[in-house]
Length: 188
Image 1 (cartoon, rainbow, N blue to C red):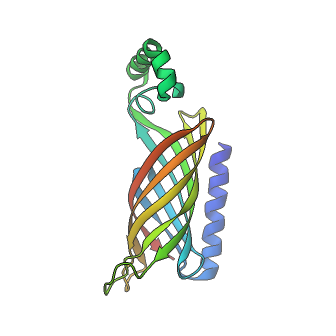
Image 2 (image 1 turned 45 degrees about the vertical axis):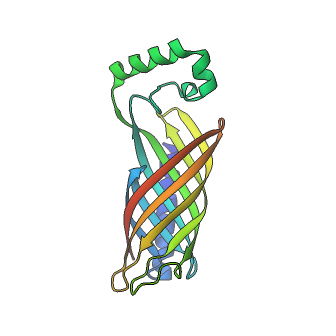
């Protein structure tokens, strides 16, 4: 619950600072992994802070297993029976669902010259951090890289974007993941 309140305070703070700066703050949604709310605060003509608050779903446990240790190849090889049994039991008891609460923030650089067009199609990239709260009892913290393309119409205060973000989870142990999303934001 504390994480949710901190996230809410961060979003309100960003909204208030964006109103003072003009149409530099966009708020919208993203579909994919994770699905949720997306925000972007332009800090200059080519850089921005990007954040997402959302949920990710998975099949009866992350990567098919309720116990996160079963996601490790070494642990799985040494505990095949346990991992397969608890995955089956979890599926029959709890089914499927949206069980990962996700937060991320990125510092993005935009290249507006890569694609020549009458519209604006910047390529963007940058580092970020990610926090996943799995099954409401397991915390992951990692670093990520965000890469994508946006369409920013010249006559409308919106953007549409497609992004992919490889992520290296550092805590509680190393794990590699890739998330992707398609989204839109309206600028205030």
